[in-house]
Structures are given as C-alpha cells and as structure tokens.
Image (cartoon, rainbow, N blue to C red; front, side, top):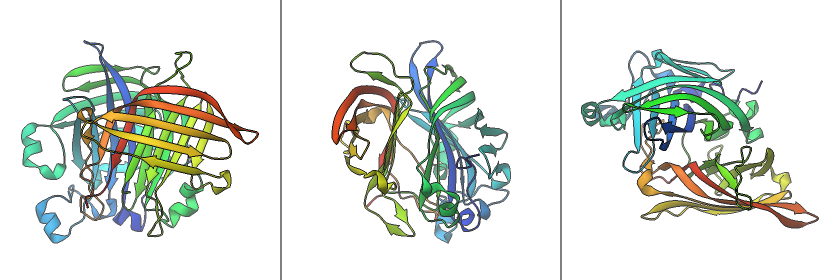
Length: 372
C-alpha cells in the first residue's frame, strides 16, 4: 500500500509542521445550470503544540508572545467573478485525528477518506470581521461526496519513507488523485450544486512539511479536448507543482515537477529523476488582468509546451500562516478557471515529433511569492 496520502507529522515536524489534503472539483448549479469550481481542504498545523482550544498564530497577543499556531482547520470555498470565497473553521487539536498509514482524516464531526468526503463550514460576516486571525471570508458551504481516483502521480524517491523520516525537504507534494471522479452534492450559500463523475474535473493532492515554498507554483487541468478532433480527452491530465525546493535547509535553483497523462500514458518532466535528462524553463507573470503559466520542458522521452492563464477577477489570495506563526504569503493567487493549451511531443530517433495540441479549461492554479 502506498502511504504517501497518509498523515505525516511526527516528532519534530509535529511541533513545527503542517499537513493538508486538498480537493478541487466542478459542480453544476441545480437552478441555473452554471458550472462552478470548488475547493475543500482538511488541514492541521503544529499538532503537538495544541490541546482543547485552537491557537491561531495571527491573533495579536499570540504574535506578540511568539506563540506558534496549533489547530485543525476545515477550509472550503469557490472561485468566480464576484463570488471567490474561502471559509475557514478552526478546531482544537483534540478534535483532530488522522491515520499514519492511509488517508483517513477526522476534524470534529467531519471526515475525508480515499473514497468519501463529508464536511461543512460556516462563518458569519460579523464573526469574520471580529476575528481577522481566522483569515476567512464570510459564507457557508457543506458537502457530501464520493471519490474515485483514476490517475495518481508520485514525484518519486523524494517522498519515500527514508527522505520523509529525516525531514529532508521543506515541503513535500503527492497527488494521489491527479484525476479524480467526484459524485455528490455541494450546498454553497444556500444554492445546491450537483457533482457528476464525468464533469467534475476532479483533483486531490496533499502537501506537508515544515514551511512553504516561495515562489509557489501549481497548475492542474482535467478538462481537455484534442484541438484537431474536438473530442474530449477523459484520460488526459496535467499537473505541475514546485518552484523553489529547499533540501536540508539549502535552497535549490527554481524547478518544477511536471506530469502529463496523454490517454493514460505518463509523460513526466521531473528534475529529481536526473537519468531522464530533464530540462525546463518557466515564467509566471502576474498582470492586472490575469496570472499566466508559461512552461517548456523536455527530456529523453518527449517535450511539452504549456501556456495557461486565469483571470484575476475570478481568483482569490488564498490564506495560510507559516508554522512559525508569521504569514509570509500575502499574494498567493489561487484559482479554478485556468485555461490554455498543452502541446506534446514524443522523441523518436533523436527528434521531437508532435503528438498533438490539447486545449483545457476549468483548471486549478496557484502562484505567489513571499512579500519582499
């Protein structure tokens, strides 16, 4: 059994560390027929420091005393023009449990496993205003979803038990459900959204570690069509993550982990797998109108060219505090309306031969750097 989707914090990392299980998917409004992307996250920070009350690090008196945050959190919301929302409900560590061998996370009365998600968040406008330390918008959302994970992506030996046990990396990443079929319903601010497996464009991954990366890059899309034929590609999926790996406290040059499944065949551009001959260049400009992801990577098997963007007016600045109690990411752009293209090449007899062009939409995305 692959335990990379299990709970990771123990020893020193439980005193300075975080672990979270992220889910993003598309639902359809039952009244209007509108598609809307949503996200759900089960999160915990510094669990060994907590107890019967949540300890938010952004509370002024905690910051003044250097008290580190410690709590479990249900985080959920949606993206969209005029409606982008993140809702946080904080729980004491006494209300949190997770399995170190498999994904089985419980926060309060809610839970997440490999095959089922149940939860709810709610915060009034008055509560959000009175408690800025929650770093939350106002709103409410509930969900009951089944999950079927079709395509996984494992970054390789960097997330093996050996490197996890010695806390080699500052931030780890594993995509157990790079493509996930979700089914069920979401109720967001009183409106019901139906989630169907064939149209959910679903995704599940997890991050854990002792701190966050800066810059921070993520791009996923599970909603592609072949440009030449116009046909949907139900087994074609893109996932990009990384930017600034830190290993044993040493910051490495900016690099990405890139995975592209083409009809179920994996094309991987992974800087840690040096034997594949990986090379890459990327740029993520942030303009007044949009955030872009422009990436080219190549190795002994193939080449990929990625050009995606997301309108800023559909995005939000997603909020996390660092395990040491500071909040360094204050412009971490996060969205669910990324759209663009992937051009894939296969290397044959020393030359790159074009496989095809694939156009995608309703992709999940993230980009940000620490405040300078």
